[in-house]
Image (cartoon, rainbow, N blue to C red):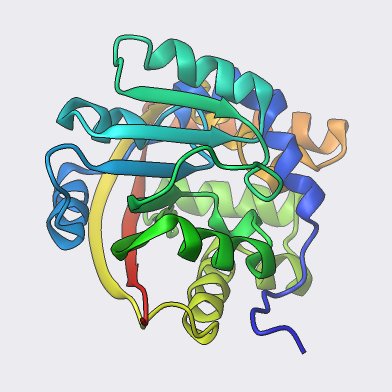
Amino acid sequence: MPRYTFAMFDRTQRDLFDDAAPAYDSARPGYPAPLIESLIEHSQLPDRANILEIGCGTGQLTRSLAPYGYTITAVELGGNLAERAAANLAYYTNVRIVHADFETWVPDISSIDLVVSAQAFHWLDPEICLPKIAQLLKPTGTLAVIYNLFPGGEGPLYEAIDRIYQRVYPRSGERASSSLADRVSQTVQAISRGGVFRPPTQWQQRWTMSYTAQRYLRLLETFSDHRALPDETRRRLFQEVQLAIQRHGGIIKRPLVATLFAYNLTG
C-alpha cells in the first residue's frame, strides 16, 4: 500500500499548460507580498539561501523571490514555459531555469534551504517526489506548497457567468470532485500522512485581481479543465463570458485566496 495517495486524476492534463505559455505569462497572478514575507520568515532563510522551485511556470513566484538575492534553481516541465521564465528572469544572475521533469531530473544541487512549489505540486507523483525532496533539503530546511485558490465571486456579473457555465459547460459531480481546491486538500493531507514531514503551518491572504474581458479569457485558457474542452464548447463558453463581462462594465474582479503550507522534516 503506497504511503502517499492522491485522488485519481488525469496527470496528462499537466502537459496542456505548455501550449498556453503566452496566456499563462500574461494572465496568471503572482502572490501577495505578505505571503512571501511569511514564507521567508518561517523558513529562516540565510542571506545566501539555496532555493529549489518545482514547476515555476513563467516565473510568477520566482519573480517575488529573486530580488532577495537567494540562489534559485527553478525546474519547469514545459519547454515553452521554461523559455518564457528564463526571459522574464534574465536580469537575475542568481536564478537558473532548468527545463526538466522534476520526477526524472537528476539534481546537481544539494543542501537546499527551501523547496517551494506554487500552483503545481498536485501534478507530482508523491511516491517519487517526497523522498527526493527530503534528501535534497537540509535537516532544518522547509518544503513550501503555495496556491492561489479561486473562490466564486458575487454579484450580477458572477451570476450571469454561472448561468453561462450551467448552460454551456455544466459541471458534473466528477468534475466538481477534482476541482483545484479538492486537489489542494488531498495534496496537503498526503504530504502530512507520508511520515517524512511534520504537519504544516498554514497562512492565507485574501486579495483581488482585476481583469479586462480579453485578459480574463487568457486566464481561462490556462486552466487545464478548460483547455481539455472540445474546441466548439470552449469557443462558445469564452464568447459568452466575454460578452457578459462587457455588458457589466468591461472589468471582472476575481477574488483570490493565496494559501501557503510550510512543512519541516520530522527528523
